[in-house]
Amino acid sequence: MENTDWSELVHTCSKDLLHLAYSYLKNTQEAEDSVQEVFLKAVSKNMQFENMGHAKAWLARSTINICKNKLRSPWHKKRISLEESGIGEAIQTSPSASPEEKAIQNDRNIQLLETVMSLPEKYREVIVLYYLEEYPVPEIAKILQKSISTITTRLQRGRKKLLEAIERKDYYDRT
Image 1 (cartoon, helix red, strand yellow):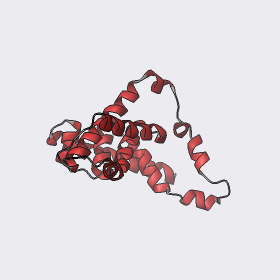
Image 2 (cartoon, rainbow, N blue to C red):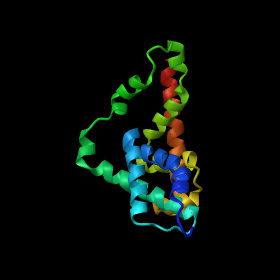
Image 3 (cartoon, one colour):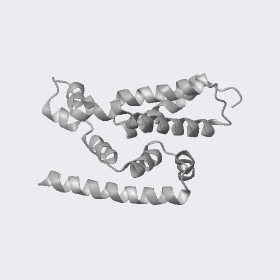
């Protein structure tokens, strides 16, 4: 990519980066801010990428770094988001919706996402990158700066923990 086409890059990568940022921050607004910050950093430095894969890897790594910096900040540690307090869900649900409609609204997807988000960070990040962002294992290894064997081990253990958590939830839901 001789001259970076920023509008194409934003259009192509922003959704994936948003998912990645949300997996760390668990807050939609903060995730959006982080993605915007990544693109602003890239544009202000006039970054030139070898190809689209290089661009995606650099943007993903930068997104992870910005999210980790936000999580370390004292401000972040002291605040509670709307989503964490449950108010965000109440705001998004239409008051005129019937109880059946509310129950049907992506209940399984929400439960699965919550379960993924409850995983330890080292497993959550590889699960998100592999299944949601659809990165291949070697690319995840580059992004996270880990060996391929480490990534495959974390994927295997993450899947196991995810399955155990899902089985626990199903057990408690039936009783």
